[in-house]
Length: 490
Ligand code: SAH
Image (cartoon, rainbow, N blue to C red; front, side, top):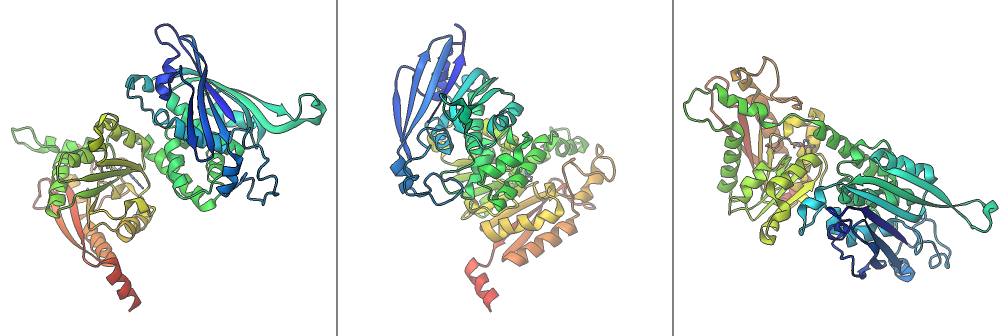
């Protein structure tokens, strides 16, 4: 089973740059062991004008059977022989997609340490897939790749060339041509090869949703066949598909939200009449959060709804933090955060301290368990009120860090902002803004429900009449899960 990736070039921009991007030297034939056999990477041609890398997966059919799912065809029990004699060794499929992601892992992430600028550039690419089982035929190949801007040539493979009257097999051969970043091309293949094949060789676990959203960054949330892609990629598991669709919707909303979050918050400072340059509210907020985290001695911290990573950066600058995890639903925000933090150029020791995760805070997430503290800075007001209990459960009920810090605008303060028309919220995407009483009422109820104590603090100038522009709650766990369980049982 095999595919080729070709680039064309010029003397100034040689096609052999492809070798740098794939992290595989064109002069060498290399082999890599994978879970299902050996993956070979060879370059049938490598000149300045044209360079082709071929990925060939030599499937070990016995290993495939031993690993459980056999051919994976629709979950039907395979006849004894069919387990060993099947198309897997010859046809591209989810196995090839997995090999692609392990052999070209850096390329897929868009990393190229030797030539970072190269990874950012679109290249004239051509991808040849000579045999892929495609449920939906050449039409679906068109329907999946054409909306992504590829020019697609797809045709069915005849059952037998010598007997055209036998008709077509269920395989297609196709060629994709287009100018794009190699990482994007690889991520699209990684998702769409198994979608066409429609039979995964491995059990689809919940973390497949994360893999899909990561690989789908920048293209899946706008794809017209998003539903089919999501459902097939997740082996038609309905709960996972629903979750993925909802997260994609959030991604779309978050990513089309073009207004800078801090724009209006910063405007508040224009109303202060001090001579000195005022400290922007966002900066004051970060300082207040960092101070509160220090006060409780937190060293492993979650920044939930981290946006473009300003707080993550501040926390990394604080030697006391040994680990910082930024979580956001928006891919665009996470990409900006990675750039701000220069994640790809960090020393290994620094890089070990920081993780950026794509995730929706309205779903419980095992990855978020066991931390000292979690911060929700200017996040809750971005959720529709009916979704707030889901976030509450995911953070206070499931992740359960010892400390939770929540900040949100104080709507009473809005009258102090000359730039803000009366009755308006501070940001177009704010679904609500609370008075001090509303925030405290919510926070106290959350604390009671989940075994936390809560204290409040102002951020920014504390106006005697309307209070501060930002309100902050610091929750500290009082009851352990065990005592809560005992309480419930009693
Ligand atoms: N914490 C940052 C950013 C606040 S803006 C700061 O204080 O500046 C709110 C952020 O929450 C956005 O980046 C948005 O993408 C994210 N967000 C909104 N709803 C979310 C959800 N359901 N799950 C995860 N992140 C969400």
